[in-house]
Length: 286
Image 1 (cartoon, one colour):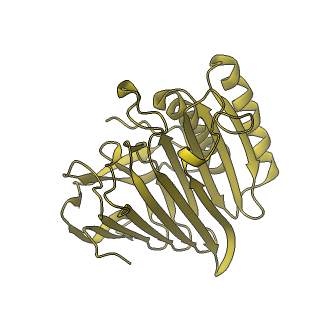
Image 2: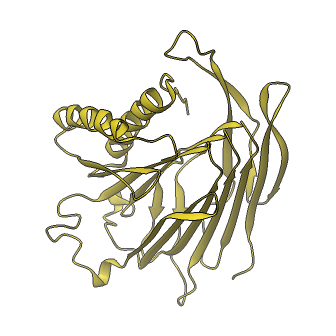
């Protein structure tokens, strides 16, 4: 494991009825900005509004340089509710002599905790090489909503799939049982990404992952109805959704621009908030 060049550790707990950031540690260039609060409106009259803590992560450097290794660890104690995002795109610069960049994220959610982690897109520059890894530990009754958007490069400079390699591993545990494992590897120079069944004419890929032991097939059905409407509104994205083996649901979006993929994922996210948690959309201003 390479030496850490940027780190964030944060712990959230309910104090006096409110989610609070009770512990934090960060090492430059990463940091946590001042937290703020959301008042989520409930869709049911018998459920009071659900308070949620908003958290921004910041990177005061130009991005991940060759040889950099970032570590991010988040722990939500029982009943904590957090919306987590970052300030801007995660930028990965060219690798030097095979020395790429790495990032490891670990999320721990105790019973009744809710984490909505909606970061800005990932931008892989020409000759970038990134190995990303995330491990999620869920207690019974907790829930995670996670999104990611992968850009092919700085498209305005003609960088479309000019990066060297991108690997992304995601492991999700529920009560010490491994319920999901994804191992993604993209090497544009060695893969026919424009072939049928791959990206074809699209260039941007986005995913929304939802994990909760409250998930039922009815949530997928409601989401599919929402996605059918979405496909009618925008002919430039392709959208699909499915349940995972256990306690999971994934929405995948292919498009030609980061913003249109983000719009599609946001609509799916808001629909999940409505059907799974009976909450109105979370309006985030950046």
